[in-house]
Length: 72
Image (cartoon, rainbow, N blue to C red; front, side, top):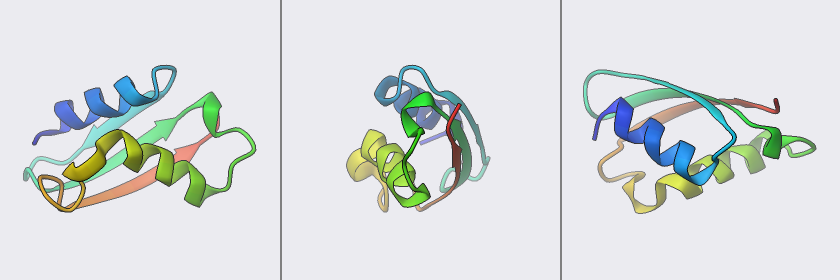
């Protein structure tokens, strides 16, 4: 798994999001996700929405993902 694949998965699940992913070791990544769909949602709910786009890859191909989320 690489940062471009993660970015593509998040954007596929949250099509109107602005997504930036960094991380070059293949396991540890940081993502910033800005999405209008986050409006009115607490940070935990926003993070769950992002994790849902990645499904079972979390904890498997993606060992760690630090998230920064906010509404657009």
